[in-house]
Image (cartoon, helix red, strand yellow):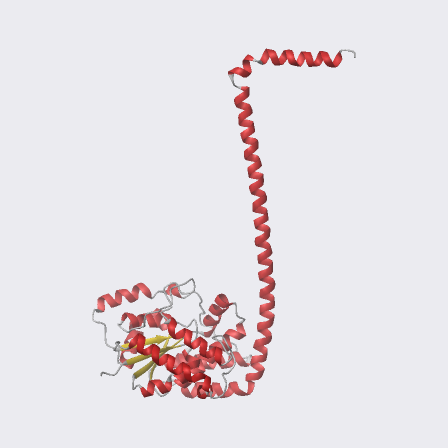
Length: 362
């Protein structure tokens, strides 16, 4: 049986993993059957197989974590008994989703953190394995996370750094190609050529159609957050590490001969002694941010309630105005009717009689 080619897309949340995975799909790479549908935060689709995402979420939960956990996972967590059932579940899913696919891809930002349970399986099954590691300016990622998930800035930066460091560390023994979201939007042809060459992906059979499909999918409109020529501050220790990691990934993306591992290994070592302090500051900032956010949401709720009350009052006033108009119209019709004119003398006599009754002595 011919060896299957497996491509795993790595990158932090909101970094462009969806975009490059869709392009791989247009090249003929299988993504599976249960893809997360498009939504307001990814109008053109997530291209993420939800069957695997659900397993990854359950695995993180079993480890006392979640997709947005900023702390390190337990030491050598992949050797724990609680993890073993997930390895078999992943293997069963691969067989069910991709048994007939010569080349397939899995995209899930959680892969950066749960990759250790994939490694034995990738080695045992003798897949031809490669990684596409896509990065994006961390400030853009964090702004996007803050907008979508209501995170504080420090939490967003530390979450980005966790994914970058762990994803790069665990993928070192395999073929890798590093790209950036900015490169993809600016010159997708060059990016695709680099990915295809690095991971031995077959060229599209119909290049014209492929180019048209990619052109209609990749657009600068996908980039809702933008940072232009901005360097991160080196005053804050966390932002200094984020900047170093960002530069290492950018340099690896600019030149295929540059390995980001030494620079990122250095960043990981620098994070260890300040990790507790950084996490404490992140938690403190997150707590204050959520408190402010809660107050903001309460004010917004009260504003909505007051607007609804005002709308109801306006509706009642409008209904009263409509009733008055209907009564006035009816009165006008009565006054201008023929019967009203014919009975005018009788009304005058009635008024006179009423006046006589008032002035006549009792």
